[in-house]
Length: 159
Image (cartoon, rainbow, N blue to C red; front, side, top):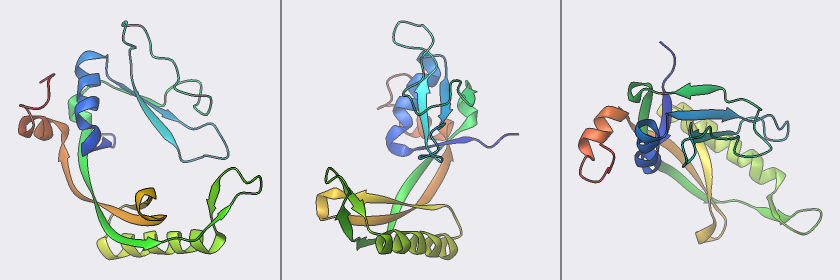
């Protein structure tokens, strides 16, 4: 059996709707060498029932995977395990803010520590609402999409 597709709990209702009403979901991997780990999830069909086009220029020309079955999807709940200020600087052209080299090293170190401490996948996100803080996240709970749907049947319109 292949590895199931994992979606965040906040996206589960939309993913379920796409599985039921839009021909499944497509997973697109990045072809952009400056963004190698990125991926995008889209419905297989557009709102008119036609094939969904690739979401942006960074995507490979064809999706990596087409998922049709609810049993091939798990839902995870992200939990914050650490929060800290990360140093930033203006980009070379002055149009955007970048994390400093030291800030990047600290992010990598803290993600590795969380992975080691909790024994599972860890990642970082930025909280721009509270002065450029980084948040280290882990998956606190994983469950099959079918279990999530059963628990949220009253709020999931496509069940």
